[in-house]
Amino acid sequence: MDLTVEENLNFYARVFGTTLHENYDLIRDVYGQIEPFKKRLAGKLSGGMKQKLALSCALIHRPRVLILDEPTTGVDAVSRREFWDLLKQIQNEGITVVVATPYMDEAEMCDRVGFLHKGRLLDLAVPAHLGKQQEDMVVLQSEGNPYPLLNKVRELPNCRGAWLFGNSLHIRVKAGSTGSDLVRSIRAWGRDDVRVSLEKPGIEDLFMGLLDEQNPEGRQHG
Image: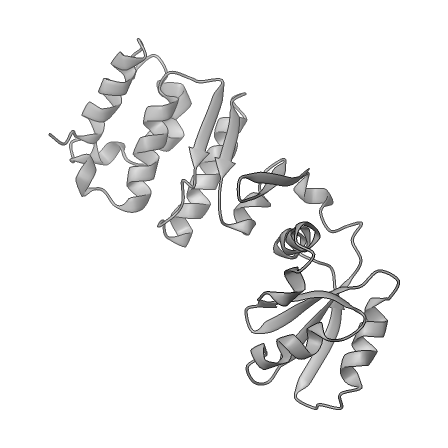
């Protein structure tokens, strides 16, 4: 049978041999947002409120490490932002927070980020340092659909790899060449509908670059 918000919290508190009152200071900021609905059945909550209830239940016994698996999947953008603000507050309480997320903007909010692919750790880094030591990459924008240009770009001798990124192409520069060389190669096509620029790679670009390193044939895949 479904439990109310309050009943769920009391249940988890009893499981861990504590009480809601004992650790209320820790969960106040999280639970305070759903406490007005404490008599509501958990199944009747919105996605964001369910996640806050789950977080409150996980914190009720003040764990040393909190592990969350894609906690904001299916949650609206505002609730995602609020959830991460809450995680930062929890971290300030001395609790280590480990989060798995498919959202790169969330990964950038962490102190350290590990890039995983098919169960393998590709790299572990500090987000604030990512990209600072990386070569500029070339960004190609087209007035039309850039996809037909993908293979054309990959055939350039100074292209190390390229992929679609929204309505643009992000292009890595081959070792021994420069971004300026690649820009000149593209401009030599003489197409007025194509614009190119040099930019620092973002966290998603770095992840795609790591996949290229793991897969020498990566340039052949979209």
